[in-house]
Image (cartoon, rainbow, N blue to C red; front, side, top):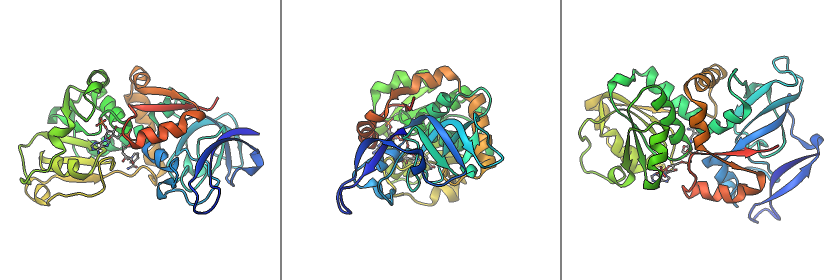
Length: 330
Ligand code: NDP
């Protein structure tokens, strides 16, 4: 038996509610690898899966949310994994369609796992989590499109959130000048310690402008917000620069014009972490192990247990979570 947070419904139309339950290992879904989960986290999507309607992501109840986890292999019928191996899982709709990481055990497909690189503990991996992994993918995409520190200042939107915090820390560590956009001025010291060299107030950018092009300001951008923020940022990019579109914390609409693409050769790079092929995942985790200092990770995390998750799920949907939440399953 092991402990899990289970979302349950009293009837088809009833709201889903969280309960802490003891579950039998034999009730785990099918999969080649059973993992003793040590840590999970709280991402924006987890907030949706913990909500009464499952955010439109959860298909079937009872359901164990948790879109990412790290732990040790307990049993494996796949030759790539043996008991004791340290592994991390993000994406593949685990925690949405499949049972996820808010439990002391998980059973998943071997293809979904990534072996943890040396130097990264299961705790570090989940301090990073899906949000941080995605931030790394965004930085890699910008670099692949020509970004380097001497090109100029890089903008990170939603900077005090999970994706934004890790993006700020990675870029700072790599020697970039980072401007962090936040709607929470009280996080300025936190962001500066992570690596931001400038704090930009959300209101300065999150307003519509009638001009499709403004002063060429940013050499690159990691955008966790979308909506009007992304539309405005596109018009502020330097010639040939790229924006990595990661999230929609501020809205899914994109009220922009194509002018920045046509007149400034600006690139809009889509970042998906869920279906990313294995080789890219491995490359990103290797980069995380080398480019993200552990002290910065420590300053980002709030520790939590399964019991805290319903509250934290609501908090992240309201933009009240700073940095990353580490859920200890021990
Ligand atoms: P967080 O809630 O931790 O961070 C989002 C941040 O965005 C907030 O902290 C806040 O930052 C800012 N924000 C929130 N609401 C608004 C608003 N209305 N207008 C402007 N800014 C706002 O979430 P995550 O970092 O976990 O995820 C960020 C986004 O990235 C989400 O939309 C998530 O779904 C997406 N995502 C996408 C992935 C992919 O594969 N593409 C993977 C992981 C996440 P501040 O307080 O500093 O202003």
